[in-house]
Image (tube, rainbow, N blue to C red; front, side, top):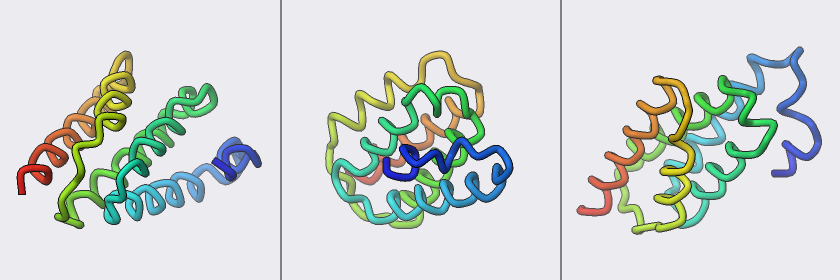
Length: 113
């Protein structure tokens, strides 16, 4: 949230750097699987600025999914994450919907373990 407030993600001249950073940061969140963190990331991706930055959304969601997959650790049945993913899915590109579907599948598999 701090970086978004400081305008880090709105700097067009550093588009590649911010995309890579957000992907790596999201990977870290996904691999640690702390309850509530993934839901907070999804909330950040739903802010007005990020809604217009589909490349950043895709990078963050892909990083989150990759981190969750790599971790393999159990994921708590986080109802806030489930609701935010449902709300996020509406009206997005095919690529974003595919990554959200991947996150949901990973979440379901890792809950059952």
